[in-house]
Length: 75
Image (cartoon, rainbow, N blue to C red):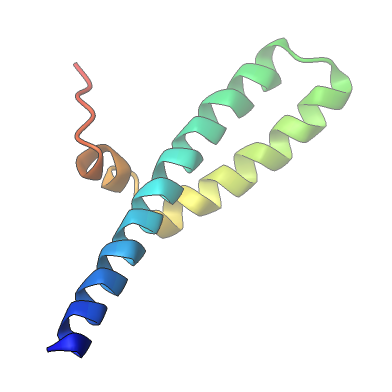
């Protein structure tokens, strides 16, 4: 009984972390593209690193996982 509750809470925590990683990845992609377009040369290099890291994070966590988990409506 105790192990069942522990396992359920553990899996809920993992699901939350995956959804949070998805949202951070989407935010990183948007910010990286913004810096890539409007930033200086030094900011563009940072933006490319941010875009690569965010793309990896979104590919691992899933594109719409965070949107479904946090119930964000995009019209």
